[in-house]
Amino acid sequence: MRSYDLVKGIGAITRRSLLATALGAMAFGAVSFGPGAAQAADKINIATLAFVSSSPLFIAKEKGYFEAEGLDAELTFFRAAQPVSVAIASGDADFGVTAFTGGFFNLAGKGALKVIGAQLHEEPGYDGSAILASNAAFDAGLTSVDKLGGHSFALSQVGSSFHYMIGNVAEKAGVDIESMELKPLQSVPNMIGALKSGQVDSMIIVPHIAKPLANAGAAHIIGWVKDYVPYQVGGLFTSTKNVEERRDVVEKFVRAYQKGVADYRAGLLATDADGKLIESDTTNEILEIVHKYVYAEDPAEKAYPKIRNGAMFITEEGKLDVEDVKAQVKWYQDRGFVDASANPDEFIDTSFIAPLGQ
Image (cartoon, rainbow, N blue to C red):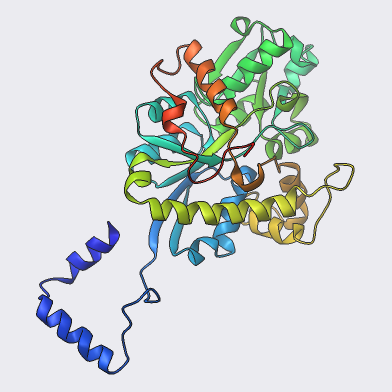
């Protein structure tokens, strides 16, 4: 524990000398040994992607919610989802917020990870991931999702969330996934580059990337994942070791994250009586924060609309759709991407945040 390391580092201080020092300081009113005593902040490393979907983390960081909980939080950014879970399992990072993958469920099934809350949810009525066709493929006839058969499709990795989405979209659209050529390209930037250059015919990507590509004439949107597969895209997770040995730190992190979620929902997901997205009193404040991390190289007048277009749904308080996560695990298991022994009842921990529906 960190407090133990601090005391250990002080050196050879005897109980008698420590007591004498304390009594002397107390006599002058200089030291307090109570609940109000100043304590060093707990350092935590959070692994994620520089996407709009990570906005609650950015908000919690910039608005001091982590600091208020006594946490010194550092964000580490990755280029794909699967390495995030590896970083948590290995102890290189303390918390992760990103999409679920087959690799994630395998690590969780082995006891390395605990899912403690929700990230994005594909939800009708809100922006969601788009199904894109390259210009060349679109011109050749790939103008709708039901025409994906026989075409190539970009993935980050086999067993990734992209794999899950296209598998389910294809099934719902009546497309034989075996007729498609799935190309793992290791990272989202590689996927985008391949689509723009015509090296692949199609891909699925979050709206804050999909819409600018389409608006710039670099690709065509032919469908939306939410219309085929409303589902729990990702989650909030940590290591089993943290849950067992640093529960207080996990609770602090969750509280800060939930405050970030509340601000995200109020600023970017506010709707009118008809369910139409509107600007709220805090929209510009939240956009300014997110802009520091997403489209940071663009001026505000260009970045803000793209961020708003990429604001996908997150459930209130970050509540996890537990039943949907179980369905995802089964999908991966049925296709051999996740070991049959992986049991979501064992790696989903709802003691920090109540599940969706409660």
